[in-house]
Structures are given as C-alpha cells and as structure tokens.
Image (tube, rainbow over all chains, first blue to last red; front, side, top):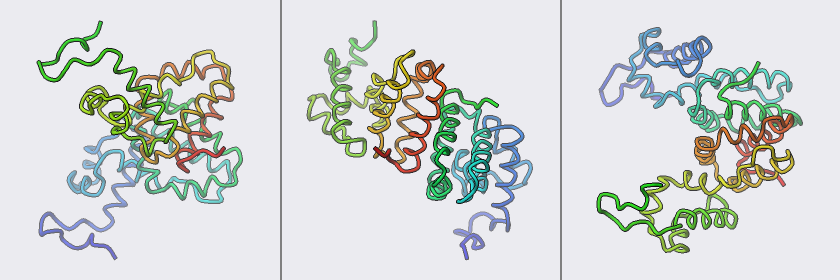
Length: 146
Length: 146
C-alpha cells in the first residue's frame, strides 16, 4: 500500500515493519514518564534500536513526533463530554512543561486532526469553555493545575 | 536610551524618529481594515514611505509585527471581565482569518505579554473559560462567530 517497503534511492536499510508504531508507542510512554521538556530522541533510539536518521526522515521535528504520538488520544466524535475533557486534559498535561514549544505541537496536531477535533466538540455546549480554560492556563502558566 | 539613534555599522540611514509608532499604528489600522490574511508589508511601505528592510530589521516576520501592533490592545490588569473579554475578542477577531499563522502571532504575543495577560486574567473566575472558548473556535474554525 505504501512505498515504505521499497528501498529509497538505494540508500539506507528498508524500514523495519511496524517501526512507526513502535516509535510512536515508545514516544507516548516517554511523554507519560517524563513530560515534554525531558522528552529526547536519544532515549527513543536507545529503547527501540532504530536509528535517529530513520526517525527524523519520518517526523522532521520533535513537535511533529510528539503530535503523532498524541494523535491516538484525540477524542472520538460523539464521545461524552466528560470523556472528551478527560482525554484533552491528558494530552494537554503531557505538554504542560513544554513552554513555547507547545504551540508547535498544537500546530502539528491541528494540521492532521482539526476536522476530527471539530466533530468531537460539536454539540457539546460547554466543551469549548472547559477545554479552552485548559488551553489558556497551558499557554499562560505552562502548566495545568490539578 | 536606546541604540536606535546610532547608525549601525555605517550602513543604512538612521531610523526616522517615531517611525516605530507610525509603523505599528498603520499596521493596526490595516489589520482592522483587511484582517490578517490580506495584511501586507507592501501596503505599510506604501502608506508610511518607510523601507521594507527597515521594517524587517525591527520585526523579522509578519507575525512579530502583528503581535507588536496588537500589544496595546492587551487588557490592563484589574480591568473588568467584560472589558477584558471585549478586548480579547477584538484581538482574536483580527487574527480570525489567519489560519495556522495565528499560532505564530500568539507565540509572539505571549513572548512579551504573558505576565501582563496572566495578571489581567487573575481573579476573574469565568475569564479563562470565556476567553478559552474563543481561542478554541479560532484554532478549530479559523474564525469566531458573531
């Protein structure tokens, strides 16, 4: 289905099957353990044995990789507002120590998940306000109070 | 007080006095007339007669210039929550057609105004939610409903 199995220009090894999922899984674990600021590509290389250049070829920046790792946490359309906010809070908390970089992650998340997020929030009258309050605190304080 | 009056490395003319204020005033007018997307440095050059290189030397990107032009609209600490939201809504509306660029402007605004915004919102229980709802709509829809 994709070109991933084809060697590219004869350079480098073909990517290991399932490598993308493995990288994203480890990245999400790492975010949960250490938060955004301490998040390091070196640790992912260490845990997966996958070369840094391979990771960078797929996700050209830390924020792009983090956004991809967070994408599965995006709430499903029709989710109950409580579930939706719980998931959004988890995602925003994982970014809570990222300082200015948080905007790069939000940008990367919106680039791929905007329609899905829009659908998920539709019909929840309070969701904009409740989610918005978290975003405002994240932007102003760099963290969310528990 | 500043180095602005000193010629730099003997290149270019010294900046005209009051040029910064003039540029920012014209930039804010232009935002109000045309919104962010149509906002163009060429129009500012046309209206002020100030060289584009001079403007870029002071603000290296469109988003930095827009953030500087919007800064005077930042609410004052202690402002009533209604005034605060009115001003925030005006600022966000001026950015409402800016698509992904809005994050660059928010970043530039936060870089200089974060403590001031934090103070302005402090003590207003509903402000986070009301302002946050506007931000969420701006990020998801690229516009704010009136």
